[in-house]
Amino acid sequence: MRIAVLSGKGGTGKTLVAVNLAAAAKDSTYIDCDVEEPNGHLFLKPEVVQEEEITVKIPAVNEQLCMGCRTCTYFCRFNALAYINDKLKIFADVCHCCGGCVLLCPVEALSDIDKVIGKIQKGAKDNINVNTGILDFGVESGVPIIKKLLSEYVSDGKNLTLIDCPPGSACIVMESIKDVDYCILVAEPTVFGVHNLNMVYELVKLFNKPHGVVLNKCLEGENPAEQFCIKKGIKILDRIPFDHELGTINSNARIAVRESEKYQKLFVDLLQKVTKEVHQHEAVTHS
Amino acid sequence: MRIAIPVDKQNLEASVNQTFGRTPYFLIYDTETKENVFIDNSAAASQGGAGIKAAQSIVDNKAEAVLTPLCGENAAEVLNAAGIKIYKTVRDASVMDTINAFMEGKLAILEDIHPGFHGQGGK
Image (tube, each protein chain N blue to C red):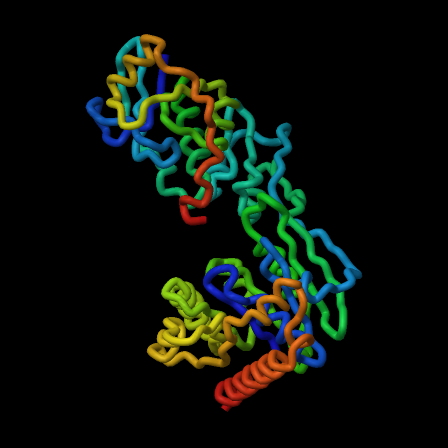
């Protein structure tokens, strides 16, 4: 069972929910797809057993072979190649690694070379496998790292996998959720929170993913995110209070499930609810 | 000398455009013959790398100098590789005032090459 945790902006509580659900299960795998600033490992403290560099293919030119036909410069939608003073110039940072220029070059002057964009760390601790994607500074897109992270981990169907998504609803989030069984949307109780919730809500609807909302940082009184869920008919899975105790545990990089009975109950319950939701959805789609 | 200027409209009364890569048109102006040609900037609608493509067309049009208020680093790299000098203009100034300022030697070399508005084109 693959569960993605996502939100429209950073700081709503994706990692809080993801690491605590991972800890609430007996055996689980936590995958940090928030490759620009992965932080789940700070809580789960895995012993890193394996590290692997992730590369993408970018073009390189053999100037002896290039005859200046400009097929590649005309082809590239991102204008990553220019032809100046009888020389081909390649802008590696602009390249989106589609490989089209190499394919189209009529004289095979272009070839693929590897460019390192980041790495994956795999470790484990306390029955939780922790796989973390880390994007190098200045690199435009972490999508190749996420592809690798998610393709390498094959779930046996029973094991619980939690995918901690990057914030927002761009390509990088789409890549993170495309093969999951369920999406948990984490929302803050503000008008701004509603705006961000709506972004990810639109996304999971577009991807036709079963989903539910965890209302985080709940205070007494009006909760615009809750009202939004009621209005749209979105399942509210749980309410996490705006609580000093939880804030203290979390800011010390400890896991609430292991520190507090109250939160152990909350996250075990949440996990059960989500598991039930997934099974119900499977029953509906298979019938 | 052939100079290139990013412009808002296709006439000499137009203003200098505030961007280089995504300007709608370029004026190619010959300071000796006063000949002027307006070219469409096909880079304006690019998904990305507009500066590179715009600079490529300046190179292909054999300009020797570019007069622009802004220039991104990728565009500057292309222009520099072609030996084209980049001069800083005042934003929204009229095209004729800009040409006259250049011919009187009043325009300075553009030093503050910005890191580019990468992603502006919706990458």
